[in-house]
Image (cartoon, rainbow, N blue to C red; front, side, top):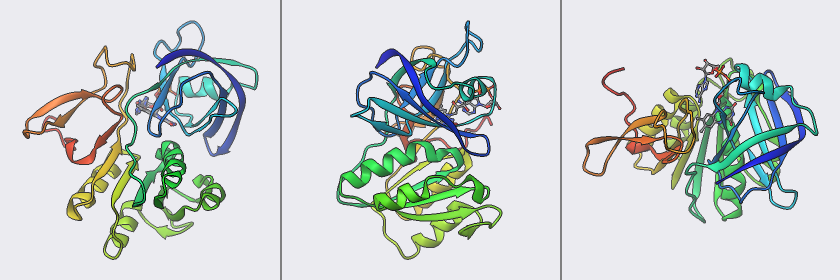
Length: 263
Ligand SMILES: Cc1cc2nc3c(=O)[nH]c(=O)nc-3n(C[C@H](O)[C@H](O)[C@H](O)COP(=O)(O)OP(=O)(O)OC[C@H]3O[C@@H](n4cnc5c(N)ncnc54)[C@H](O)[C@@H]3O)c2cc1C
């Protein structure tokens, strides 16, 4: 982990409210599922850094790519950056996905959960895996980088909630239909919590190991403040708390307590 100042190389709108940024940075090689913690404003406004997944990494150019949805003050500030601007960052942070080699894998992304899974798909293919990428979005204008994924050799399966492209409905319904006939060695998912819970349920039904990337509001990003701690099962079945920032954001799906009793 390191603290750095990155230089914006490109920052452009790719879908409604979604931007893709390339940052030149001097950092150690990140793994898929890791994130950077960015200062998104001037004079500590907003005070806390904002976590964004590494969408891709180019070792030769020394650049990371980010894919982010503008939802508030920090991401709006980021969207206004132009080439040459500087951004302060921490990272790469967190524990990412653990990839096998030579297996058949299902990657399941919901909405902006696509961000880390793009990098994961590229790495999974490099390790000789077959990748079937399930991408769920609200409607077709939110579909991203289909051509890039096809060029890598990924089999892309699309679901749109409004039925404007691919399977009409939820991406987890599409996955459920495929699981009746296809056998996967692993499932890797990132997206809204209810989507991840549904993926975890399917993985348990079909006895497939699954890894999920969780999102929580976080402050320090380093495991010190415990602001992002979530309940997870220990080996003995009892519940403990682990930090999404330092012990995650990726967890084995069977360890996550999907419905804490107090919520
Ligand atoms: C490990 C990790 C990786 C992430 N990767 C990405 C990514 O690659 N691309 C992307 O677009 N977003 C990603 N996020 C979510 C992103 O960090 C938040 O959208 C961002 O911090 C919002 O900042 P803001 O100042 O623009 O919005 P705020 O003004 O802080 O909040 C606006 C809205 O977003 C919600 N929000 C803020 N932070 C979070 C959070 N951490 N989790 C869930 N909801 C939040 C708030 O509740 C509020 O409704 C990631 C989050 C985590 C924890």
